[in-house]
Amino acid sequence: MNPPARSSFRDIKAEMMRRIATRVWPPGALIPGEEALAQEFGAARATVNKAVQELARAGVVERKRKAGTRVALHPVREARLAIPIVRREVEAKGAAYRYLLLERRGGFAPEAVTERLGLPRGKRMLQVRCLHLSDGAPYQFEDRWINADTVPTVRNEGFRDVGPNEWLVENAPFSRAEYSFFADRASADEAKALDVNEGEAVLVAERATWLLDRPITLVRMVHPPGHRVVMEV
Amino acid sequence: MNPPARSSFRDIKAEMMRRIATRVWPPGALIPGEEALAQEFGAARATVNKAVQELARAGVVERKRKAGTRVALHPVREARLAIPIVRREVEAKGAAYRYLLLERRGGFAPEAVTERLGLPRGKRMLQVRCLHLSDGAPYQFEDRWINADTVPTVRNEGFRDVGPNEWLVENAPFSRAEYSFFADRASADEAKALDVNEGEAVLVAERATWLLDRPITLVRMVHPPGHRVVMEV
DNA sequence: GAGTGGTCTAGACCACTCA
DNA sequence: GAGTGGTCTAGACCACTCC
Image (tube, rainbow over all chains, first blue to last red; front, side, top):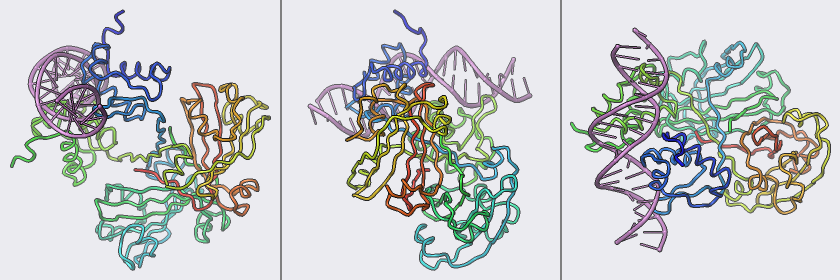
């Protein structure tokens, strides 16, 4: 008769989840309004609102003003990937991390780089190539172009002891990023650095970042064959 | 003097973001309590709370009772990837989708499959191999093993017109999934299906799903060279 | 013990959108 | 125009955790 005398928004959320999972509220169904739910659960509307908003954020329901809240027909599953600093990624696996600077030089960025970042052709940028090792074995080869206009202090950084990845996280927060994965064949340089055969299938992660509208960096991170990127769902 | 006369939690969040980005509140710093912020912004504490909670969820700040709220030292950036049905993925790009069943058969699953799913060796499963095309070109080759014990109705489904991906989404909700990416060389079968050379570098997505503790399916999805998985950050 | 965040309430006004 | 969700307020109690 009188369910939980006290309902927290978690209880309400859980009960709603249950009704959706057991098809008491089937996909596409219109569920009661916040006012009605508040009354049913004996809670304030704000409490119900918090519960339903979390369900909406998770993609379980869809909300529209005036139209009400519906159970999502095709719940959009979302995979999440934490993007740590490489050092932490290696250390999290219990392995010893080592960093090796291969090259640091200023020069004209290739058109592929400037175009990707929205910079003019022939722009001078800073290029850093380095290697990250896990227990002595190559873990990631990093080839990065940095826009010194956006991060002026980078001119004074040698990247001899600390990698550009870690340095940028501390010194150049980004507001926007584009991140993508693809498979590629290892170039001669990459093969040599990773100690694999040229042309081997490698996983490449590419990341471009901006601070507001100013491009910061474009990086190509190459992992040796067999490397897996694992995501949480 | 008096900034926004009316502060929404978005304004408050934005202003706090700005202070963190511009190092008014540097990494590791303790920021004012909710009460103080509420007074400063001329808002109720609940409003400030909502703003700060969103920053905490985004990993920008870390909160602890009694200890207060600190700017995160190493903001854990998170990339998100929507996992749509392949058909929708293709159609979203404005291309014409086509599905082609290559093979559907029952048989003993390889040990690699049963082990990955936590099933006994020599388990009989249903194997489905199919191809997804985008504007007539191979888009994804799918090689899937399904556990009919968890999804009995799958025995009556021929997968001639609708792909197992789409069918499972409608008929077998999963509660847990493991999702990973890696680069591989195209096998003979895969190369033939995707119309590329054998040994070419291909991007492989692998997904295993369970309903509670019962394994549902393990699928290997192979994309032709050049395919990019783009993530939001 | 005391301070801070976590949550709840009751009431209110607003904004969007459907009819 | 009217209904629904979005947000805000002022006040309150609680739970966790540091000291």
